Image (cartoon, rainbow, N blue to C red; front, top):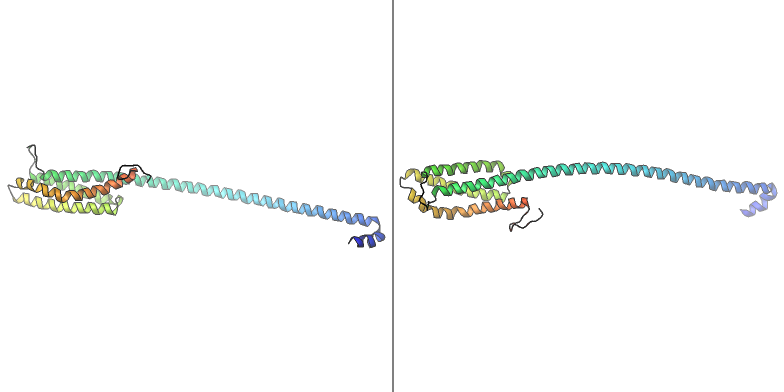
Length: 219
């Protein structure tokens, strides 16, 4: 190319051709550089715009996730509180059932007067009814294992109490016999009560964050 310029164009057009060619080359490089710079500038602007849009969308998504997390936490806390209340109330009523049923046939070693056996058994039956109604409403908050243990205890105690009421109604001298049945009655039903209690206690302890040894853990 240089041979062509110096060998043919230079003699033909003189030094002006060289200047023109040099200027053309310089302008070409200059415009090429400017085009590249403009393209880079446009790309940078587009990139910044897309980055800003991405950041804005990210912030919106973060805000939505934060709101959902707060709502989930609120619902979880509400459910946990309801479950805590249900388990606590259920446990208290279960204890009341046991105390009323035991009191119905338990001999008074101090010799104190007690209401008639039928009256005591009626109170025990009322405690059973109250517990059963409460349990049916709140068993949603209890595990399947707890429900089975409670049902086993209730069925056993209800059948036993029904038989004792029939016996007491048909026998005038039933008080002594009821006291004799106290030991076998405790032996039969106490294990079932303890099983139900243990299951409910385990659920209660889990909610408050302690294990069966009353050591704290993270639920």
